[in-house]
Image 1 (cartoon, rainbow, N blue to C red):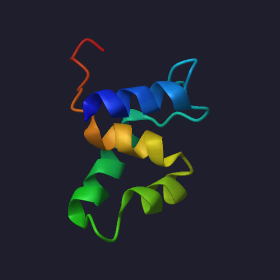
Image 2: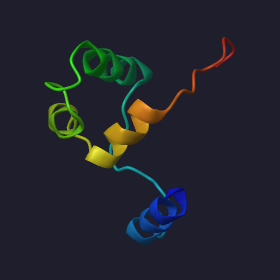
Image 3: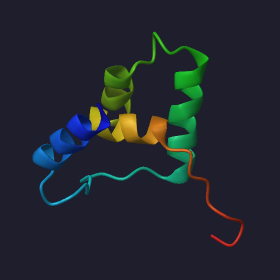
Length: 72
């Protein structure tokens, strides 16, 4: 399953993932918060439209568990 997804992503982004528009850490936290508030209302396509980013970027933000360390 994951191999198929990985191949699909490599096919869709042959040069690697480099989104044209990047969100601040605060915006990413807000995106996660409103998604957690109501997952049905604030689905991936809705969040992509509201934040003016791609659905793939929203999916990656929601899936990511990375947190900056205190030094960053």
